[in-house]
Image (cartoon, rainbow, N blue to C red; front, side, top):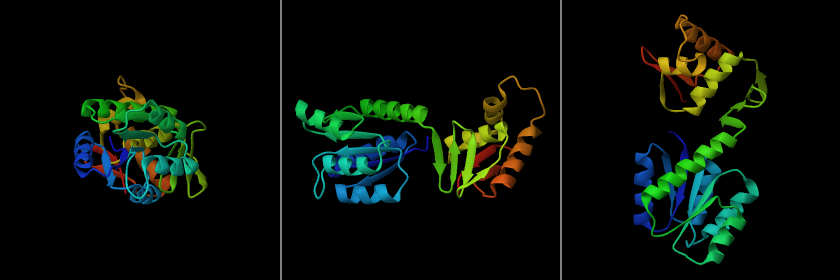
Length: 219
């Protein structure tokens, strides 16, 4: 997994524990100790999930969530707090939080909640973007720098799979199985041809070849 999660938590011990457990699950984890720093990171980074403590200095979790929701109604938010009153949970959901976890909590529960929210978000996602490249999953179109690029369906599927697994090595056989099906009996060099055509059409060097192994989508 290569989803990016921002953890905004002023308790350094809890922040480090959450960082370690999510990092060990393969997520890219960013951290901030207060709401203002968290908002700055939000503006600079492409995030897939936000985990917010509520009681924080400078700007609390409610304020930060409310500020972000004015700009982004899709970014999943988990509120993390020691508060236990029903009113506080209702307030979090009214602001636009997707989930609410009360301290002390089980890290296994946290991981399951994170995995579930990210899985649901990916299912609902209609577009995938990376820098100047955007895939519209409904219309099967690819946009680079606001210009539409014509791809075949297979080329689009390959690009979609590689982008979905960004920064991960995708084995040749895995790619073949997912694009052509596990029982494909054709020449595997057809994959090389599609990759070559993709690079030619996209004119951006995001698809890396690991000779004899597979491919990787990254800068």
